[in-house]
Amino acid sequence: MIKVVFFAALREQLDCSEITVSSENITTVADLKLQLASKSEQWQALFANTSLLSAVNHDMVDSEQQIKSGDEVAFFPPVTGG
Amino acid sequence: MNQEISIQTSDFSLADEVALLEQDNPIDGAIVTFTGRVRNNNNGMDVSGLTLEHYSGMTEKSLAKIINIAKTRWNIGRVKVIHRIGELNIGEQIVFVGVTSKHRHDAFAANEFIMDFLKVEAPFWKKERTEQGESWLDAKATDDTKAQKW
Image (cartoon, rainbow over all chains, first blue to last red; front, side, top):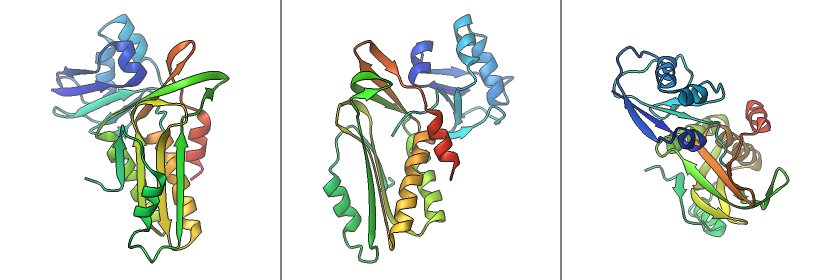
């Protein structure tokens, strides 16, 4: 299983802060994104946003990053701290 | 726990932080501090306050990485980064970066480097409260440009 967490505007728009996804048929962040996008039209629209950032186990990664069961994957908008 | 990083809801004291950077530290002749505060305006709108969200765990890891890179690039002594989360009002302190070094150049450069990368890599998000309601801030392209310069 893969734990997936969402933050900030994305979390609010999805109305979801965390879900668990089966790691079956998922080898990269891009695969996971596709699967999440297939949940509904709204999810599809939100995951089509190319400015979304992703992290695996607390490290910023790109979509080609490999993932496996037990990983924590995060999706969020560009950061605005400081 | 990394003593150099603090993510907290409570305020901090600039004087106390400077005292800690100086304490038993006779080898460093320079201290550079940066403090960021909540402004009352953004994009021409009156802002009444902010809510700051972060990704616990990744925030600390990301800041530790930035600090470690700064230590390899400059000859610096002590570093402290504080970032507040939760509800903040106008004029409140949001962020503190303090760096010491033997001579001023290293502390100046490392401080700005840490702040520039915190802006584009550390997972914090600001939601502004204005007369028109609440809205998430958009990231600024100028912040990316600043970080890329290093």
